[in-house]
Amino acid sequence: MSTLAVHDHGASVHDHDHEHHHHDTFITKYVFSQDHKMIAKQFLITGITMAVIAMLLSILFRIQLAYPDKTFPLLETLLGRFAPGGRLDPEFYLSLVTIHGTIMVFFVLTAGLSGTFSNLLIPLQVGSRDMASPFVNMLSYWFFFLASVIMLSSFFIQKGPAGPGWTIYPPLSALPKAMKGSELGMTLWLISMVCFIASSLMGGINYVSTVLNMRTKGMDLWKMPLTVWAFFLTAILGILSFPVLVAGVVLLIFDRSFGTSFYLSDIVLNGKLLPYSGGSPILFQHLFWFLGHPEVYIVIMPAMGISSEVIAVNSRKPIFGYHAMVYSLIGITTLSFIVWGHHMFVTGMNPFLGGVFMITTLIIAVPSAVKTFNWIATMWRGNIRFTPAMLFAIGLVSFFISGGLTGIFLGNSALDINLHDTYFVVAHFHLVMGSAAIFGMLAGVYHWFPKLFAGRLMDEKLGYLHFWITFICAYLVFFPMHFMGLDGVPRRYYAMTAFPAFNHWLSVNTFITWAAIVAALAQVAFLYNFFHSIFFGKRPTQNPWNATTLEWTAPIEHIHGNWPGEIPTVYRWPYDYSKPGHDADFIPQTTPYSETMTSNLPHDFEDNPAGLEQYNTWVKANKPGEEVK
Ligand code: HEM
Ligand SMILES: [Cu+2]
Image (tube, rainbow, N blue to C red; front, side, top):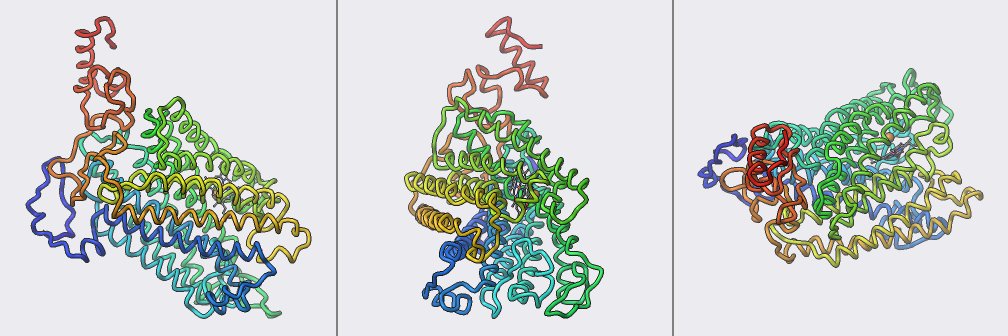
């Protein structure tokens, strides 16, 4: 049998004879692997590598903001023509900001997060042997890898990488002559993103079809963990919005290379009128933000799913408002598509239209608040275990609250006219998206490390060190930026010293830079812990956190097909923690109700009349008078 075949599992016993025909070479096992668990690791390690690179880039531009008048000969040694005389070249500064944002948003928080956890957890938590198409899953990783290589390669070309910002607005992105970062680097950015989007779509289609078609017996939609719900809805969001960016990007390639004017009109360069007419840069903004806004939820929703799971497990309590959590995710998914205009309040849109976008934007605060409330209610009076994963999950809740509140300011079109393109926006999205999503991802890494790396645990003490320094520094870095923004300090400026009005922010900028450097150093503790634990971590039991979900029923050592013999059957929802009347404080999803008679409740059998009858018979015999009709 070919390793490319999609195995037919059904409910029957998996045929294991064929395993003897697999000849796993190094290449098929570690490089071109089609096993979802290995692909998850590939996404994670590539994602971590990209995160380290993007973090180093940010340290470089923060040094510029902290010491705009100083020169550092070391910079010239390291960066050559990008830092002549030991000072960053101003156009290179813009490239740094652009590539930092692009890598963080797309390569780390989209591919690194969904690619890792959707791949690892969807098959293991819904009970399937692999993704619907393991081959397409493999392609998804390799397109992501290719996109990463192309994006990074732009540092090694003459003019350097793209510079118009992660949102690549025209005309800077459309007019190769506009600046250094508009030339070949910009073209590479566009090609890289086309590969990236191909990768996302292949991943997303697999996640959706696996969730819809390959759940094990008993795993109906309302028995799925919130992680799977979040990954599923995220994939739908991506499938419906990324193609719009492809359209936008392809038109941009036409404008750049084939003389069309989709986005350009009346451009004067060096006193000469260029022959573009009829296009509009605003069209690009519409196409970009039709993806761009859903994108911010593509980034945060998987992190939310991870946190819901980690918070329930470590509070030893059922998740509060499971259905409300799912409906909030569905609400966010739907609303995401009708709010993109809030990024464009200052493009001269009709104030009435601005009002429409304002209302839909503010409505998103409702499902967001429901989720926040439910996390807190889940922890309330819980028997909380403060594992590193739990701390990072609580960190997500904290950042989501403090960053989400400023969204309500920005959502008001009248206020946004003042705040747009200032550091207030930078503060908003780094808290609510940057910090929150990274913390969700880290929570996932600490929690599921034993599932990723066959039964190893990460070190807790280093985990605490990592958490506290990162958590405190994130606030030290991003909180002051609100005040700078309120004072009108613009984003993406190379040296505020050109504006005497902003001189008094220099010391704050220096402070922020040092906080960012300390935060970066704390990641060394994480990296050491991560790679050291892969080989030397403690060996836990099969279900180290006493969790209820299916992934912990799979054997510690990874096997192809996840479970030897039959896939477990599911009987109950994933949050039976601390159920009154039961001796252990958790009941796995695989435990039938017939084995937990003393703790069953009437509502356990809502859609199950046969079960209810059994329950009543038991109650009649053991607790007469308490039957439920
Ligand atoms: C209560 C919910 C939220 C509201 C009302 C809101 C509102 C806004 C508004 C109006 C802007 C545009 C500001 C401007 O550019 O002038 C904005 C920017 C942004 N928001 Fe939010 N937001 C909310 C939650 C979120 C969440 C949950 C995320 C991410 C997970 C997020 C990520 C971003 C990003 C990345 C930008 C800036 C993009 C850029 O210009 O580079 N927001 N938000
Ligand atoms: Cu938005």
